[in-house]
Amino acid sequence: MKIVLIGTGFVGVVSAAVYASFGHEVVGLDIDERKVASLKKSTVPFFEPNLESLLKEQQSSGNLTFTTDYEDAITGADVVMIAVGTPSAEDGTADLRYVLAAARSAAPFLKDSSILAVKSTVPPGTLQEVKAEVDAVRSEHGASGSYFLASLPEFLREGSAVHDTLHPDRVVIGADDQFVFKTLTDLHKPLQAPIVKVSPESAQMAKYAANAYLATRITFINQIADLCKKNRADVDEVVQAIGLDARIGDHYWYPGFGYGGSCFPKDVKELAAYSRSIGEGDNLFNKVNDLNEERIERVMDQFSKTVGGWAGKKVAVLGLSFKPNTDDMREAPSLKVIPYLIQNGASVTGYDPKALDVVPQFLTEEILGDPSKLALSTTIEEACAQADVILALIEWSQIVSFEYGKVRDTSKDQWFIDARNQFDKATLQKLGYSYTGIGKS
Ligand code: UDX
Image (cartoon, rainbow, N blue to C red; front, side, top):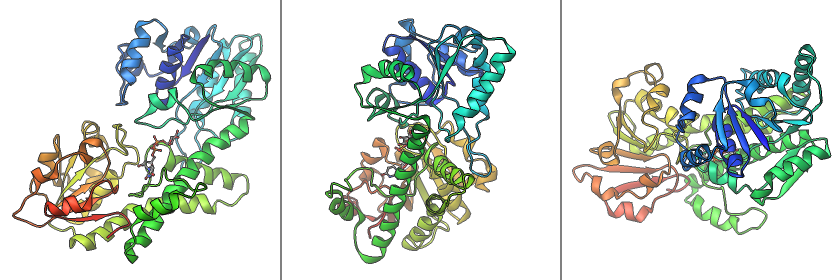
């Protein structure tokens, strides 16, 4: 089969490499010449474990190529997948302009009986918009033959994207035609995953519902954690107790500074906007979004009381990306935590195993106010030297497994803030730190 992935962002590159590994002829297509030039050399412009090696392997086998040429790529393709970005517009709605532009550019070259599948996260109704634009371009070009549409949502997580794509919990195929179901089922057979065949609208709603549910779950446990903090309960013990209820489960329950990343914040807002656009209430989704947006300031205010105020404190912030195993800074807690600390009179030394190169693009002078108050360190030792407070923000394994006795400064009192409840309180206390975590005293 010839497969084209339009958009060589996160989802596009990972999916292209995985489909190529099944032995298909796969083309990654992007209008960004610099990105394509670097992908041709197997260089990925972001950090994702195991991706570069898979890319190299599939490129040298000849199964995977990259191009900026629509005609070359689309001609003869059996399946064309659109995996471009859908940024949120001002009012929270999904901005479909890149999806529609990709569909228009591919339109003249779609062969008879090919499948045009949308992988980008889009609201119900999008395939009708895609069809209108594609049909208009095809009739302008006098293109012959018919094509099929499908929705193929993606559920991979950053930091484990290759693994998730190779071992998905399910593959959701949204279509209205048996030929499409059969072709896409065959394509995903090597994954040995359950295949859910539904309407395009159900597939699109499933993607929003999954992300909004997980975001709501995180918001829920964060709310419970705040109550625990006030009443001597320990949220980790609460999770242990509720998790054994099979209806609830013990996974995906860790509290923290709120959810971040490129999907949850955006998808919750989009679902609220979609709900409003069709005349339905958006109370739940809006509330989840508001609680998550307010969260960092609330938590930092709480910790301020614990550590005796931030003014004049030297704070080591460990973990700057939005989660471990990625250098993605989108909606990372550090982007709110560090300016908050500086504006409240602290000086900060930040450490991250992978994101240090990209941090300055996000933590600009405008955001920081006084950039001289932020230093970046390539080692945990350096970041923690003489710190009054160590704030372990993201659970990178380097940060969790570090021996904090090495940086304990016995000449002063030092606080250790465990923002992900990853550390053993007694061990840190034995080293001389004052310990505090989320949802526990
Ligand atoms: C998410 C979805 O998991 C994935 O299915 C979808 O395709 C894209 O969005 P991702 O954003 O890569 O993936 O990361 P994920 O590991 O799900 O974490 C999202 C955010 O929630 C992170 O900020 C993480 O720290 C936070 N989180 C996650 C919690 O605060 N607590 C948890 O229990 C789990």
